Amino acid sequence: MSKTIFDVIHGYIHFKDYLINIINTREFQRLRYIKQLGATNYVFPSANHTRFEHSLGVCYLGGKMIRSLKNNHPELKITERNIELVEIACLIHDLGHGPFSHLWDHYVISANDKEHEIRGLIIFRKMIQEYDLNILPSEFDIICELVNPTIEENKNNWYYQILANKKFQVDVDKIDYIQRDSYYTGIIGRANYDRIITEARIVKTPENTLELGWSNKLDFELFTIFTNRFKLHKLIYNHHTVKAHEYMIVHLLRSYYKKLKDRSIKFTDLTDNLIMISPDLLSKKNCPKIGSTVINIINNRKLPKFLVEKVISRSSENYNTVMSKINLLSFPQYKGDIIIDVVKIKFSSSNYNPMDKIYYYKDKYNGYHSETMWCKTEFNEIIIRCYLLGEITDEKKEENLKLWEIFLDELSIQNE
Image 1 (cartoon, helix red, strand yellow):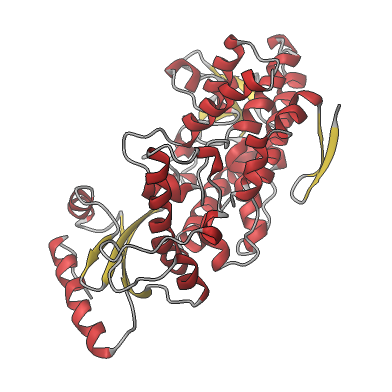
Image 2 (tube, one colour):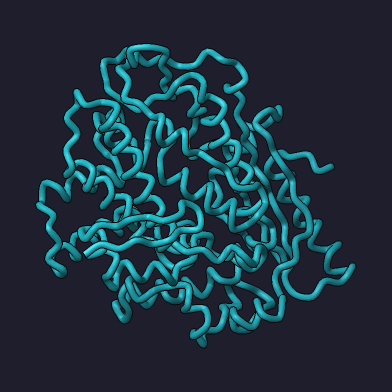
């Protein structure tokens, strides 16, 4: 049994039976009801794409990359089963996402809970038994490391850099979501990273490891992965009205999180659709001045109103002082009738410029780091935002802006 599916980003994709057996399960089909970008579609109406189609796209790109590597490196004797395990890992890597995707992990679950990668692997382990999937325990361990490399040796191994590159973050997961999110929001324009997929090579590094590398002619294409990622975070994922919707939805999600902890529901029952069926009221304690259902607030556009923001860049003189104080606090914070939140937008998810870690080659696949100075550029911003709850009057606005000014002063930020 095999199937060909048309994808708006990658065209016709062929899935063999070992992938279809996973796709045709309740656990995987659940991803049809979890949007890739959470609440973003309330601001960008066409951003209705789901974790389901993203997972299919990542599976396609992962298979395409490792097959290209096999053709270009016959000496490594990459087997068909090596390829299949990469495709399976790519397919199931998002099984553990909660409703509204990252909103669940960032604002709802406790610090002791496992995040979506580990949750997804726990779900997949049960699926292997329930659906009698042809995956050995040793192969499941490999899939786990492909989805979430934890062993240091694997982080420096080309095979475990295809899906989740913990070293320099060029991987098929990121390539698909940048292309897909750009297309469905229409803000950046559709990026084409086909050369990064097909022209990847396995290079020998000065540390005697075998890692992914590219021709130095592709340094700009690689750089645009991170600049486009920054644009998406800046313009779309953290748009102030998107965040205003999230501040409301999170209260509903927390009520379901409590039910999950009480074991009255199962995690795999949770999808974005819960927002339409829940009668739960928002807590006045957590969300003062608002006591209506989440769906009424959203439908009637009675959202927290964005008032003002302050951008702190890494070049600011007091950046380190401000960050040390911010890191001691939890957000969002409620003060009077305002919500204060901090949004961190970085060049990548790491604390260093990933362009410094990418390996290039000129000949014989001996890897080296780029010495080009322009790709050493890195973007990093901290945005502190203030929203007003309820109806806005001049008196109310003025009174609450004083609380905002006090907060900035406590962070050693000069308000201009």
